[in-house]
Figure 1 (cartoon, rainbow, N blue to C red):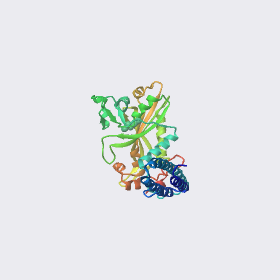
Figure 2: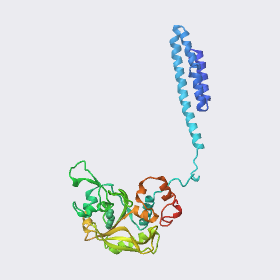
Figure 3: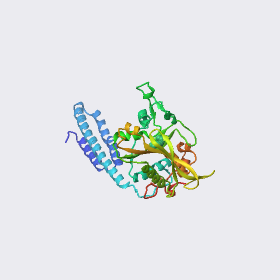
Figure 4: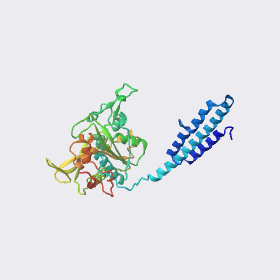
Amino acid sequence: MGKFENIDTMLHQALQAIEQANDSAAIENARITILGKSGSFTQLGKILGTLPIEQKKDFGAELNIAKKQIEDKLGAKKEILAEQELNTKLAKETLDVTLPIRDEHQGRIHPVSKIYEEVVAIFGQMGFDIAEGPDIEDQFHNFNALNMPANHPARQMQDTFYIKNPDSDNFDDSYVIRTHTSGIQIRTMEKQQPPIRIIAPGRTYRSDWDATHTPMFHQVEGLVIDKNITMAHLKGCLYDFMKAFFELDDLPVRYRPSYFPFTEPSAEMDIGCLKTKTELKIGAGTDWLEVLGCGMVHPNVLRAGGINPDEYQGFAFGLGIDRLAMLKYGIPDLRTFFESDTRWLKHYGFTPLDFSSMTGGLSNTGGQAR
Ligand code: DAH
């Protein structure tokens, strides 16, 4: 008990009012009636000026102590109420995750992502791992180690984007944005001894722009290295892949001899189709369409990757994801892939819940928004 009864009474009333407040609006009200401009304690403070000088000091001190008590009580009560209110809100605001989505046709999976998923599903089931490499690559991995030393004519096969090396004025030290995913073959060999069985999907870049070429496009690299690997393994593996991918058991395919510096022998694979002015039908007719490059890994490439070519052999392949998307889903112009036109995506895209799997179906066309 203090010396001043009026302070005691007011304090008692104030603490009671705070105690009784049962939500944040009530506590704010209590604060205003006690400490607000015309609040009880503010009024009490005004008495101070009217008191005889000898009482002033004690009255002031007691008033301050009482005020402090009130403020502490207010703070504590506010905290309790806020927590209570949050708990009630959380209990009320449950989210029903079983509710159907409002418009299942809003978002779309881009055809490139869809093909990517399909390719991964097929090779995944065959036991391939996924490997990765950087988009900004050094010339060793993108060219030299792939049997394409500086000034090799095969470098002219690709219109390369070079990036200056900030630490060197020598052109041979400049970086490239990778022209193909083949450099990931080397990066994988550097990390891992055989047996190797990987695919490496990724973005690739070349200075090119027309209906079937864009400066950025997508490839999947494949690499298998083990003892006694032959061209027969390559043929069987890629044939199985193409049949699964185009969902045709009797897909006609052929291998044509070709040239790539990193494989020997090299080949290109074609699939049978029917081309008319208005239509492209896969699996029928007498026309052929090139779908990938492949070959037996060149001994120089194995050596560059730290693998002994007398002990191990391998095959490799590279295919264009965008090209496969154009073929499989009948999309005529590659440039439209990257224009971010939502009308295009609505037409050619896939619903997000339509997963690609070898058991559930690769490209359930029911899922394609048409
Ligand atoms: N890197 C080649 C390209 O971009 C594609 C390729 C061909 C990859 C043959 C391979 C291969 O692994 O064996 O044109």
